[in-house]
Length: 293
Image (cartoon, rainbow, N blue to C red):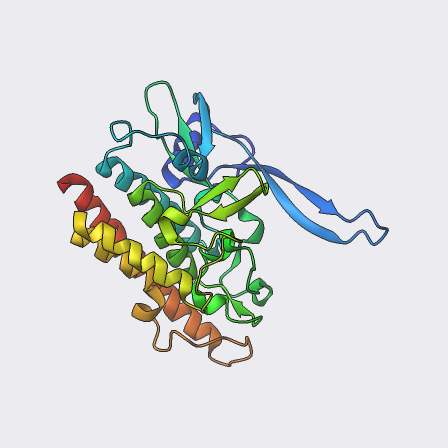
């Protein structure tokens, strides 16, 4: 029902509630060198009616905001709640997004509402929870790898993405929403996205962390949580729960799955249950804070 071609007004409301846009079709990209090899599959999504525009969350965070114009903290937390609810919908139907970041979130706006409803997109990597084909290598692109749990970026080893990995990605995005600051900026000189040195202390040369250790990116994220803790210890605790999701929910958070374990599906099911439970607690905590801050 989430992906019908012909949507009624009620279905438009459903899409707004779930934060998932209807898919009208897809486009395959193939190599033109004679091999006809499939490069990627991109979805064609339909935007909801009666909106005056939309931007990616990354674009919104990079807008010129003054201290007076920045959305109030409760509004930012409500935006985060809607986003995590969309993630839960995906998980409820057995899907792992694998690429949650401000670059894969569309936010509508109108003349009256600057920050409207967030919608997840960028489903080209999405897979079923137990699909072994969903293994992903480490990504040298820091703009992508910062949102991936360190266990998924070790050397060149492969491991299946799991629902907890989406919770980690949401935690990084939540930190940007709370700070109302993009961790990456577009450098016109190099025509590339680089880490914002004012937020995560990236090196001037390439935007990589000064200390490229395995958990270097995560350590910098946790250091930024200290800034949040000065404003709200409870909010900082919620962000830390997302960033430490594997440590909280997994008996062995450093385990790298090979896909050949006899108990792998049972383990994935247990961790999926843990992920849903953690997400529900995070939503409840953010909702309470949005009414108290």
